[in-house]
Length: 88
Figure 1 (cartoon, helix red, strand yellow):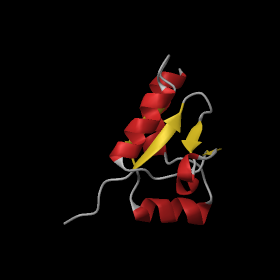
Figure 2 (cartoon, rainbow, N blue to C red):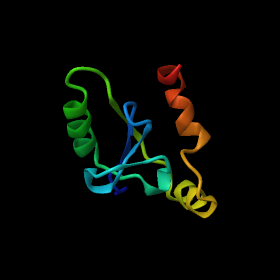
Figure 3 (cartoon, rainbow, N blue to C red):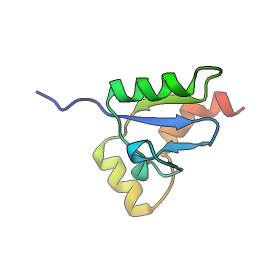
């Protein structure tokens, strides 16, 4: 049985990923919090009551996180491209 899929949460308001434990924000995927689908939906539903502020996406693979951590860079181009339409 495969482990449950994890999600990152992008905050359009803060232009950053939600941090671990629902605390803070970061521009680095390897520093972002990883949430179950249930947790991510709960967070997004709370944040999106009046407008769309948060959006959940599947977390990158562990190897991508390790590469980002080694390079100490922000969101991978693959994930960042998903938000291009929102940021204009």
